[in-house]
Length: 301
Image 1 (cartoon, rainbow, N blue to C red):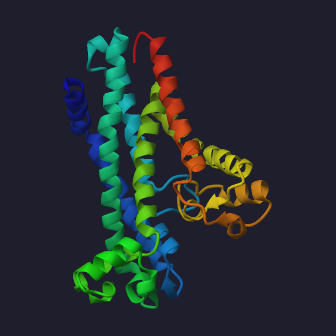
Image 2: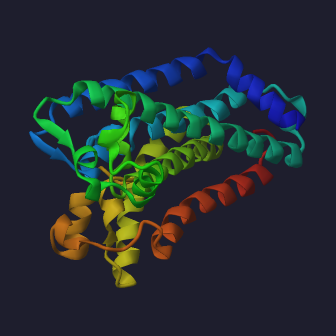
């Protein structure tokens, strides 16, 4: 508990923490508003709404919230290397491992809160920036609602979000079919990115190198997942193809792994496909194991 309290005080006391969080929220809102302003006229479906709410752009390997969380994790470890606050951590392996785990336990919830905050900010930004000719499908078509949202509205005697007060109008893009599951995957991705930032920085003892490794992992992981799914005979899960976490090279991966287009390769597999979950979890587990082994051979963080 003392190590957790120490890490929480350190993270909270750094000015860079608050500046980074504010920058992520601002950039996320601006990008979401710009993307929403460029939406073509017509109904806005679930996949397009998810991309707006997460401010996912193809030129960046991760959404802004996940990238910011990864940078926060890398800075957390990098600052510890530059300015060690626990003298005993320079000697005892057990204490260094506890400090590493404390960083993961503290950065994880902060990343989840950051992801939720960006979703709330993006909901408002998208609602204000959508052109007049764009209609949210979940707001006008009850059949476009997710199962949970439809059941919740039905329990209060409403057939769709149109019957809700105007205050709840910005929530319409978040309750489309399949959108809540995709947004949950976005929150989990942000947490994993924060953990990855801590672990890559612990391996390199450099925040900058840790961030570079974090940015390089999504394209590599994308290709590995595609190959694994291909070998097991499963198509790429539709929700993963629509959104996360592999924005940078998905078209290329579909082209050479599947020999077809993204639309032809995307199938009805679930985002919780065991092969996909194993492929995504394996790198994080491998990084943690490598970090523990490296710490055993070091005399300092």
